[in-house]
Image (cartoon, rainbow, N blue to C red; front, top):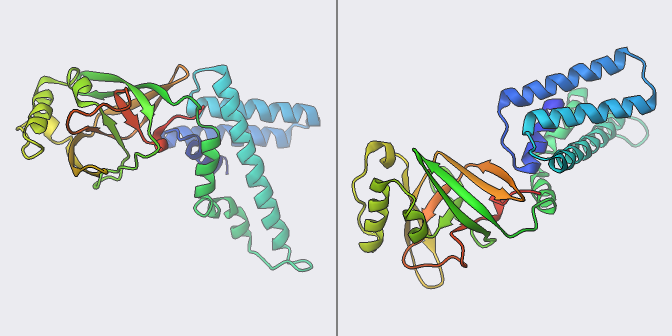
Length: 273
């Protein structure tokens, strides 16, 4: 149950956490819960212990950079825990088969939060939007080999592009601004793609060619293919905190200025506060 709560919190916060990290945090919470059962505690001390354990689990799994981020993420974890506890308790009541209650087997009671994950995934997304940073601009950077490209980014709620192969969301960047910071071979390929009206791709080394992809797009004025890459990592900064995510970086076709910014991020990737 601890593992599921941490996993659901990561989904709600749109944070990446390794499997072993979630398992470690879940094991720590289980050990502390066992201590709470063995050692008699007053209600006040039990609540303090649970709060400290929850904050420790969140800090271990998600590594918040500020005290405010730790408090916010812990509050979300505790709220999700309370919701799951209520859902499980309701299922437990129905398992008794009492007056007007259908009989539910114990394994369905234990799995009730997990069973609610997929049907309530849209709810998770809606709740996540409530915690999304209100700032509509920040810094975006991606790494490719030894190069680091950093640009001013803006939130673009109309950007729903996905890479056809991996279904990763697409960050559209200003070609002129990004090309200056790209490795020379890729910079030449991007410029050649633009000059040849998106009909040819300049040969690249295998280390770069395996990261190249094409993104189909359609606008009011035109449609076609954008040259894109799968970078080694992507990050976006909001309120002094850098968030890591997986995405594809596409180079805008033609002489396009992206709302005065260097990159347009879809809402799905915009960081939470």
